[in-house]
Amino acid sequence: MSKSLDLKTIKQIDKSNMLDLLLDFPLQLKAAVDIAKNTKILFEQKDFTKIVFLGLGGSAIGGDLVRSYLYFASKLPITVCREYEIPAYVDSSALVFVCSYSGNTEETLSAYAAAKERGVPLIAVSSGGALKESALKDGVTFIQIPGGLPPRCALGYQSIIPLCILAKLSLIKDVEPAINQTIRVLEALAKEKLNLRIGVKDNLAKFIATKLLNKFTVIYSGSVHFDITATRLRGQLNENSKALASSHVFPEMNHNEIVGWQNPKKLFKDFIVLLLRDKEMHPRVAKRMEISKDILKQEGVAVIEIWSSGEELLSRIFSLIYIGDFISYYLAILYGIDPTPVERVTYLKNKLAQI
Image (cartoon, rainbow, N blue to C red):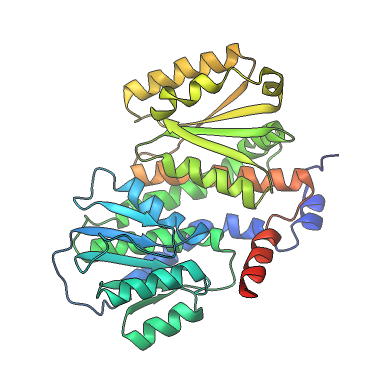
C-alpha cells in the first residue's frame, strides 16, 4: 500500500531529513564557488593534455556532469574512471581530480596511489578520511568539503568546485555567471514546482512519482550534455527510492534498444518511460525522440516528458537533475522507505572489509 505525500507522513518516513538537503541544494552551489575561490593549487601550471576524474558512485557523478557540460567547450578530453586501476593514458600530462566524499572509498584510494606513483598532478576532493590523510602527507592539493551528507547529496560540491578550478587554471572560461543563473533556476523550481507544500496536481515531481509507483522506469535523454541527467536519475531511483531503473541515450538507443521494445509484451503495462528533453537539443535527436515516443505508445507503454528549465546550458542540465532528485525522493515516500540509508551498499562495504 502506498503512502501519501503530506507533511506528517514525510516526517515519519524521512527520518534523516533529506528533504532539507534537497531544498538547500542551491546554497550548496554558492558554497562550492567560495571553496574553489579559496583553494590554493600546489602544483605548477603546465600544458595538460587531458582531464581525468577518479571516483565511484555519488563521488563520480560530479565528473560526469563536468564532462557533459563541457562537451563542446573543453579542448581537452574529459574521462571518468570508476575502477581500482587507472588506464595507461593517465600520465604526467593529465590533470586528475580524485573524488571520494567519505575519503575512504577503496577503489578510489587504490587509483589515487597508482596516479601518485606516476607523478600525475592531483587534486583531491573529500570531506576527510584516508584520502585527506594521504593528500596532506603527499603534498597534494586537497579541497575540503563539508561532511555529514550522503555522497549523492554532495553533487554541488563535486561538480561546481572542479568547474571553478578548471576556470582558475584557464582551461575553460569563467563559469560563475552560469552558476549564478543555475542557482536562480533551481530556487525558482523549488519554490514553484517541487516544494512539499505544493499539491500533487501542481507539483511536477510529486505527480511523476505517483506515476512511477510500482512501475519499472526506463529513462532516456540525449547523449550530448544530457546523458548525465539520465544517469543521475537512474542512480537516484536506485538509492533514494530503492527501485530498479534503466537508462539509455539518443541517438544510440535508436540503433539497438528501440528494437527490444517488442517483447515481452505482457510486461509493458508495468513499464514507464521518462523522456528528458531540452529545447536546444540537436534537431535530429528531437525528431528521433518524437518518433520513438510514438513507437512506444503503440506498444502500450506510458511515456512522460520532462523538459529542462533555464537559458544557460548549466542551468538546463541542473534543472533536470533537480527535478529528478525530487521525483526519487517523493517516490521513496510513496514506497514508505526512508530515502537516505543505503543499507546494501553499507553491507557490501562491511563484507569487503572482512576479506
